[in-house]
Image (cartoon, rainbow, N blue to C red; front, side, top):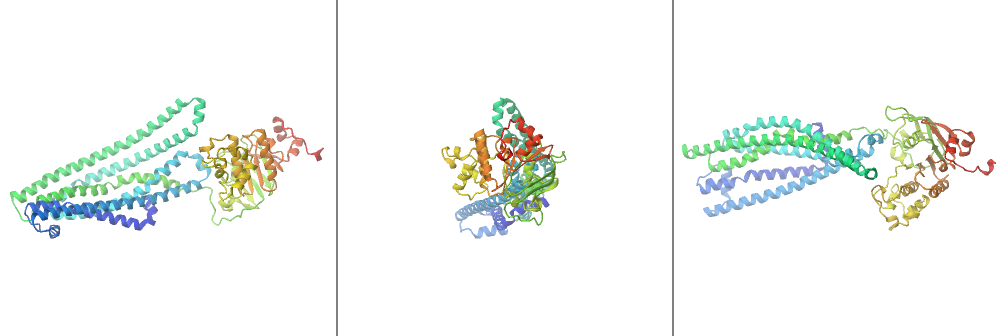
Length: 605
């Protein structure tokens, strides 16, 4: 019940629309209950000459003109009016239902997307992207399915009550016979409802895996082609498709078996009603005529109502079966919504206006899950406007350290402080406004070059965009594009080289007003000419921004105010380039391996 209430809470704001929907359903149902009576009156009172004594006979007859022909024409007009009115009510009901469903779908998808955005990188890196896509695109329909089943069941209860009263007034014994299939329907729905839920969960899991397989195969199609692995990837894809189809077949078999049982129940019930009802008409009209007995018109109404009776009866007894598809989808949505994001604002988190600040890494330790520490007791102080670098071999924790600065992760020990304030005590949004990142994996959006550069500062002018591109060494190739800064970028920036993508990313970081610019291997994809360009750009920014570099190319960090050498997750050396060379330690060894030849400053001679 809590799940049902939570699902329909997404439609609470649309209660007037729900009310209108219910009224239109009631109108359509009421008209449907009247639709069989013109035919019954035509058979009994007009053609048969029997004067009906019930209220509906008297009401319809009072609306008809005199004469047989006039009555026949009048009944035809009434039947037409009822049908047209019912169709209009059904159309209005569909419009209201669609508005309601789409409004709820928007709210569910926005809630889920917002939560996925708030989840930390640990969650996203533990889940395939296809899973998130499937939950957003398919599972979010679960809430509207639950609402639809609940409303249909509620309406079915009212319809069933009305039909039962009418039928019982004509023939209690025939009404009881019509309900004789209810226990079998209820048992079938309970049994198949459990199986349907299990098969639905299996199908959604397989569909999620299929979506993931498609996303992954399309993301690495270049690698597949270059290694000639098309056949192997197709075999893997074909296997995923077959497993998905098998899961759907198992669900379909349950659905077909259920439909077969329900259909058999209705067929048996229909045969019983037809046979016993025909006997009652024969008995009351021919064998032992009785006034007010069962007539042909009554049997017409009864058989017409029978279809209307079994629909609501099936909805009520089949509630558990019908709602399972929605329950499965809603559970998968709520499973994500109920996760506690590890990175979130503390109660009473402090605002932090964007401005240059001192950065302290205060005995920072970090490990992924229960693994061994990637960072160990890192102690660093960076003053505003300084340009510092972290260097070391691959896997020593340099990039992990950078991911801690904007709180993609939190330290498992120690703290990161801005002007002495623990970053965990600050609003996450304010903290991240202080940091502009240029990571090794440069994200290029499928929009124009100018919009890519201005992504972190959408209100920037074109002149500011041009200036940032010029500083990053990107202006030269951008201005040679057919549309210049209005040139579109392909998905993932595939129409640009790796170096061009990196320079666009650097321009994006430079355009922000973040006091800290953090660059992870900023020159790894650049040729020597553009590496010097980036190095010169960074030197110009010294004193204007706090620059934090991670690089394996020591030529990029030569002019830094301080260089921190990392090994085994800890800072083992620190100093300027020349101080570290003179010390003859790990840094000097790295410089020798890279054949770094930088003349000492004049005053050092």
